[in-house]
Image (cartoon, rainbow over the protein chains, first blue to last red):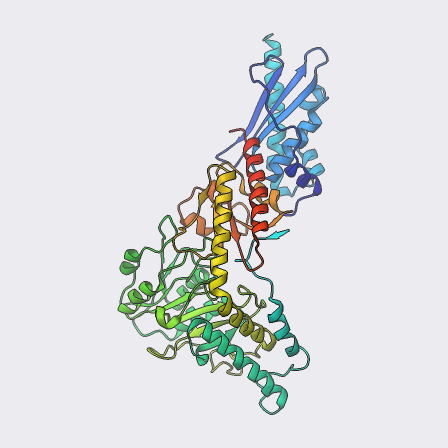
Length: 130
Length: 382
């Protein structure tokens, strides 16, 4: 498959690969996809409670080049973003920025879904004052 | 970029190219033009090449029919035999790991009233001779088993397979594309009745191949699939690709000369590659037995890694093939036949070593593959 330079760069040198402690009160964890389906993305965020801005965003992924590039790009966009910005993220924007072929749109959607799920996880912890 | 895809194709050897060039310009005659010197010269060159190719496989020159490549040769063999098969013989036996040009042709033969048995292979990619013995019957007219597999390099026990086929009055056809010029392949010693060959796997040009058709003990008849002119003793009409054939002949002669030393060198390089990967990357799976294998082939799966991501990670450094079929989401039919789960089959790399491969290239390949595999595994959420 012919990928854009934006994808190739992120496959060879992905940004923000890593993990954060799930139980930390300021960390939210979200996952989407499954190994059985061939693509699984985990995104974690550390949010500043006072500013409600994302200080750290990391990912782990099993999947194709498009899945890696999508997860990397999503974490890059999450860094410094507000909770609201994260909730408003759209997978089509990821597809467009990475110039993904349409048959890879699903994995871009998984990355965005994992990000939103991470935000929800943080909000659940925040609401319960954990 | 390190080229490690010699099973896909090979560069034309400079000596082969030099042999071909005059036949594009000075000696451009049609080999079928018997009325003038240009035609005689072309015809002489074709016959010289025919002899070289025959010598490579232990055949006689008259048993070599030139085609446009191995796909055509496989089609000619199977369809050609099907059209003239004896009454009461409608059965073909082949193996699920054959090249698509054999498998698809066998499926096509159903329209000619044939039935095909597609034999499974054992987990190491070898043909099970007991299963073959059961499958071949008095109604079988041909058994088609490739001499060496293009993906996993496994070499078939053709002598034993021929004996089984002949015991029931069937012929043996073999796709010898990967084997000829790489490992000893003698049609008389093995008992092969038809064999498909191609130039571009042995440092010759693309677009030219041949079908060996036995003339003695027994004399094999096939129906031509191309009509119009009756070239190649009526078996394959069409103006001969003289420069291509000259190149094929030169490549065959060179391959004969280099085969023993090259096989030894490639075996050592392959061992270096495998031991390097085992040292740098834990948990790898070798696909196909190492016991009977093309010296230049290694096919390895890397569990826990997405195959497509691995290939993209490597594509700036290595020219290599993966375990995927042409559509990236599907694993190759050969790896599926070994019983692998889909994700393991897709996480396979086929390393094809060849004349240009050096120790330095092998060491660099180990480094880049290990780095990519370890990076992708570290990235995994599992």
